[in-house]
Length: 123
Image 1 (cartoon, rainbow, N blue to C red):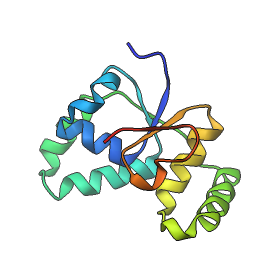
Image 2 (cartoon, one colour; image 1 turned 90 degrees about the vertical axis):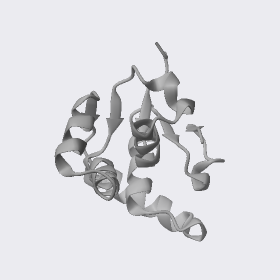
Image 3 (cartoon, rainbow, N blue to C red; image 1 turned 135 degrees about the horizontal axis):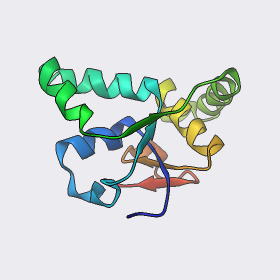
């Protein structure tokens, strides 16, 4: 099993569910994410799966949710502002700040995060 701990961005979770083999190295990991990332994943997958099938798929994963507090919200807004040319979403910024605040690597395939510190970039 992989020794690193990751914050799973929505991109990473969706790729795992799609069966992207590049993410096989984290298949036994607890999926640490935020409720907002989970909502984003759920919505995205509802576009291609019915609710019953989707709930069954998601139950097969071990999720752990990190809480978003005002300090994280503030840091996220500042990070988004400082990187506004990248047109990052609030959910992505919150996830990245949660990762940094919890000493986790931010696991994503989102090109906008490719060159940031503490990012595990996987396509």
